[in-house]
Length: 261
Image (cartoon, rainbow, N blue to C red; front, side, top):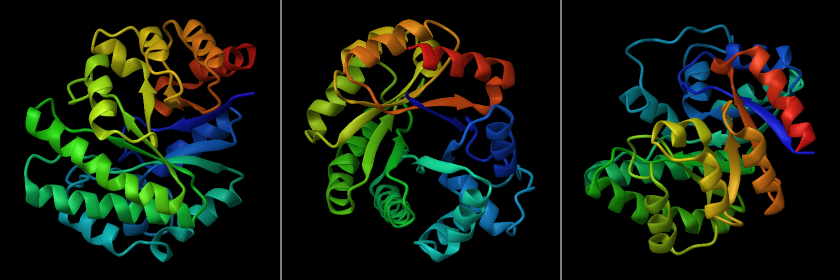
């Protein structure tokens, strides 16, 4: 049976909301976001924090914390998570949204730290999103994944690119080009069905376009059964992710669909 995990579409959403949602729908796995972990650490060990409007993933305080958080700073979060009976299936790292060399160097350094932390805490997969739909960002994303592939090989963690509407990899052609130019088998796809739909791409087409390269599926309530069936025929065994924001009734339906697939 495929593993179903809960995640937050908003990486700055309070972590306690994600944990409550997972328990409400009977899930034992979650996909965490690095920003959620660092926010929890920065606002104290209690999980009932609120999102701060002025706190974003590129905020200087976020970078300072990331550089200081290889293991010890986030271990408490993972211990609490496991005490709640939940197991992380992956980590959403900060994005490669750079447009210049100075930002690029800092982001690669931060993501490498996040990968090391994930590996040491037993999280076997890291997902990275691309930045805006711009040739400069695409070039940085290609270069970034080539560099991060060295860390992946050393650490033994999985690494995916997540498609997002309006990002430099929103279309199937963008992803084919990315895989071709990066040129490493360790790079896989975190397939976000809702984001493909928003970008006018049929998620089922995405599911059959990258045989053997899909490691995660983020669901939506359109064409899900056909998409999962296509993935299973291709041997997909990765995690299926349900968003907190999509609500409890849909998640119960999702779990039933996954069990039938």
